[in-house]
Length: 395
Image (cartoon, rainbow, N blue to C red; front, side, top):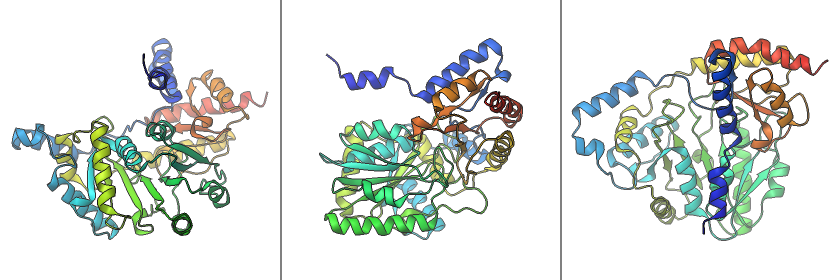
């Protein structure tokens, strides 16, 4: 009568959402200020004034049909040209509007890319820890997600493990940097080594292997760290970008796919992306927000709150006795749990009203994720609770 798979996806909430909803109920019982919810990666930095000003000006002064009407499927041509120029200015590329396809955020961009590339029997690889929704995105297009074990000392790629997972069925590799959940940024050395390996395997297997660069956190990179722009290192790259984090617009669902001229058979790949968007019913990205990001593309993001919060939480956890790789970007910490069973650890943390996400959900058992895109004072008040949690393991 119905698709059992779709029913399971629709009725089984993600662990992150389940924890968040538990937090809302708990807050009603003990007060919002007494619950320390680190579950959800929802930006708490206000949307920049220049974004709000652009939206208001467009609503007041631009022809309503241009603001509220359909655009062509790939997106407003002027907007795509403006974004392409901003990318070129930053990364020394040579994109034009024809290289961009506007989407309803990064989730749509990634799923469209999988749909465009996937053929029967194909596999997409991801290095743990990884955003758990990749699993259903890949499976929804009939492909298989292959998980490479984590290199937990620095969360770069373990290339021995990575190469062992490559097969002639490998169609693509997901690169998420800065990474959710580890906060790690893949170094230039890592990207160069990855590109060299994939070029060799393309030649060996006789077909293209694509990098799908998932980049919603690109702008949230901390001092001293640079996020390599993957198309400058590897030609068969699709870049999936979202303004959800950089402009604090997660609910507006606006992003894009970059398809460089250099990808194997550019015309067919871009055409397949257009076809995938069509069958997935993405008629066009929101018209208003296309215009807004077209005006604001390339403007700086204020990440000072995330810098402050990350340092505060990291230092507090280290002082409490936790082990953690210091984040280089994004707004997550991924410390080691204080017992092997990370689910049991996160359940114990609830006794102290600390809401944390088990690392197993990210393909990395024995760890937990803490999203620090929350109020600074909430983090400050949580630190004694982390100390109490750690002390409970010493009794």
